[in-house]
Image (cartoon, rainbow, N blue to C red; front, side, top):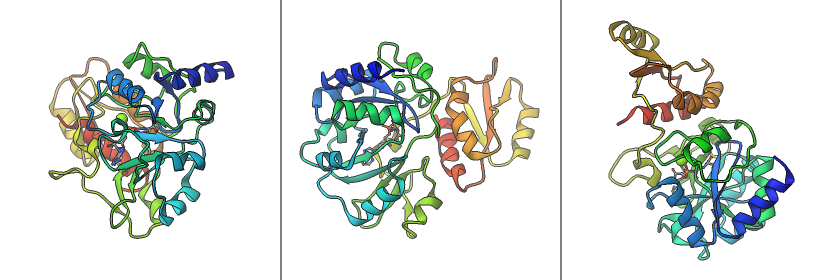
Length: 298
Ligand code: TXA
Ligand code: MG
């Protein structure tokens, strides 16, 4: 990874094409957030449903004014504490942001990534960059350049090594009556509560999902996954069924987050089903459990 790579990637973005790049959470598939046709290429490359909006990535606060019409005081507080970092804020969108980015919503999700390559790329392009995770739609998010190449062989990838968090950003909606967590992620609920004590987690079910992304199938491993609340119940199941293997993850939840998507992409050889025990519902465990539950559905 050289400066030349970043420069040529930035040129591609300005030309309206897509580039995959590392962030501290997962790899993103980026395009100029202000160019409807460029953004359309993201959906085509991923096979992504067009009703699932994208997160816009910025490198400085000046860019925020290009994509958000209003920035409430609570947003400023969260930005001061967590940016650059893995927190996406849903704000009222600026008219310049095309519908393709927001899937027709009047709101836009924005974050400033905490990764030197991502920041250098956005700065060099001089543009806000819309980027979903750089996986084929439905697959586990990529945490290495090799994962991106496996899913999107024709896309240019900036290789920044393995991602630090391994789980996507936390998404917080600030456009409703009260702040709500739409997606748990690398910033924990406990960290958010230190700034907004009353913050709630939006329920994942119901006719109208709070976040459009929540209704789509996600993180599908190649082999069916079954989750258990306790190790004892998982062990009983393992003893009673042939061809079932345990998905091996570190016992500490933050380390498990880093290892999770690679593990889901590389299930134990010969397994017809994989099983795992959920983590305690606190800190990084909440987001890991959320992804495990989603990966086990369907
Ligand atoms: O860590 C991340 O957030 C990574 C890296 C690349 O930044 N990106 C990522 O993007 O995970 P994606 O597209 O896989 O997930 C975006 C999530 C989806 O759940 C989507 O529904 C939600 O953010 N989202 C985006 N815009 C929204 C909006 N205006 N209102 C509500 N939810 C929104
Ligand atoms: Mg994704």
